[in-house]
Image (cartoon, rainbow, N blue to C red; front, side, top):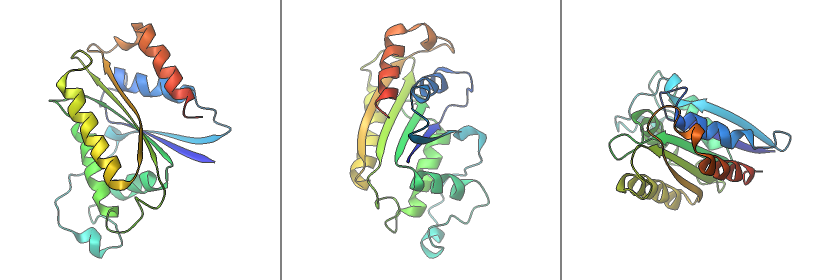
Amino acid sequence: MEKILFLNGSPRLKGNTRFALKTLEEQIDKTKSEVEFIDVTKFNVAGCIACDSCKRNDGKCFMNDNTNELVQKIVDADTLIFGSPVYWWGISAQLKALIDKMYSKAHGTELTDKKKRVGLISVGADEIGAEQYKIISSQFRCICEYLGWEFFIDEAISAHNPNDLSAQNETLSLLKELGESLN
């Protein structure tokens, strides 16, 4: 059974990013896939301090936070769907901290043993095609290239106020189609 992991990097638990990810998730046939949805901001993930203790500790971060638990879920997943609001031309600090902590598993082959499929949903106030979406997309393309993962969903959404996305029928239809592609 395929394991699909959604990682919501938005601190707004009723915001557009979470709404977009949940729209995708609702389309998945749960009899064929094991699905887990994680609101990253509910967990404590301290920033990486580049101490390299994980190199000497079997890929485990020494910090007393949720890093090891969440990074292991990333390792175990077949498909990863990242979602983030756009903050200052990048992803949220909470999601970035978790991505940085994937470094703890980068010394062996745990992140590269199986080719993962990766999706990205970025939600910002700027118009589609703006530089911020390109920067975020480029970062994820580089990560996927480096790890040998397939970057198969890259969707930018323009939605500023908390309920903006719910009124965008065309975008919602696209999200539903993308969700169905996860089956």
